[in-house]
Image 1 (cartoon, helix red, strand yellow):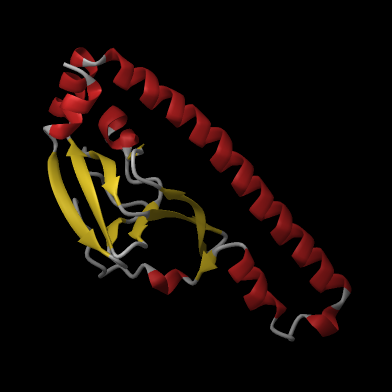
Image 2 (spheres, one colour):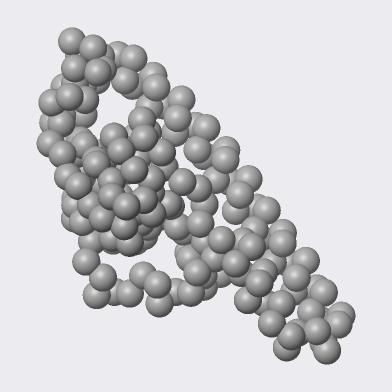
Amino acid sequence: MGLKESLAKLSMINIKRGEVLFKEGVPSNGAMFFLFEGQLDIYKQIDGKHTKLRSILPGEFFGEMAIINNSPRAASIVVVSESAKLGIINRTTFVQMSQESPEFLFLLLKKVIERLYETDGKIRAIKRKQDEDSMISKSLPSLSNDGASASNEESLGQVPLNTFTDDAQSIGE
């Protein structure tokens, strides 16, 4: 059986715009996902702000660390399209897909490596920008109260911490 056939057998969930699939640091339920429809954004807490790292588009797997080592979620995932259709891959399904479709493991490993490089570069750029902004505000104290901070946060894709409150319902957890 090929990868397409394996994906067609997945349990599906539909979630709406603004819903949090899972939050960074929350224990995982051992499931990863495949996005069939919609768009999701990935946020990571960096220096007290939830910073958008990238978007997840249809055809992508994500949440694989939950399958591999059952670690807490490394980032928060939020639906940004009207709705999103996701396939749930638990450990049993993961093993079965791996055995039935070796291409699945190759594609997954390739994607994970690409994401590691991409995320590392993005985090380094954000920190570099924050360091530059900090140095500028220290050398020009009269500019620190003119609202530049808020516009810098927006340009970095940052949102306040209260966007992901502790009482927000997580889907799939």
